[in-house]
Length: 126
Image 1 (tube, rainbow, N blue to C red):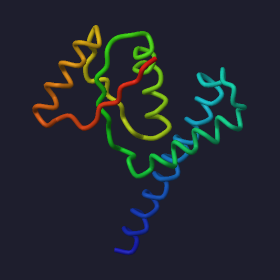
Image 2 (image 1 turned 90 degrees about the vertical axis):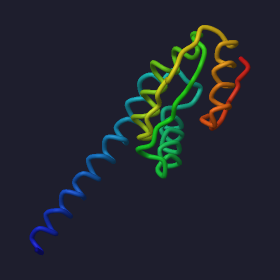
Image 3 (image 1 turned 90 degrees about the horizontal axis):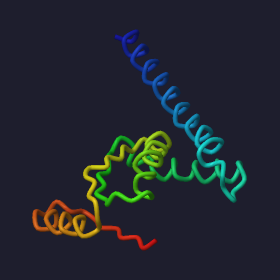
């Protein structure tokens, strides 16, 4: 029994170390790669990404569903930023539905709201 407990504990510790290492590696990957064209220094970028990682710990393993119109900004978000966010935080982002214009997105929001399936709407003006 004690031997089994030690084995389970060893596996759990090893998994935690590997998992933590993967998320730390992601910070370096993104800070030195895609996010290198920034006004922040590499050290500042690493610190900021670490903040996101720490703030997201209670939500690790959860997922977010996004509904957005298809514009270049949102395409970049869905193809690049969602990958970075998941690798750094452990939170999966699903781009659930893409519409061609803001009017169609508004109708979709209204439908979701009427079904009590809408959690939050964030509107950004560019």
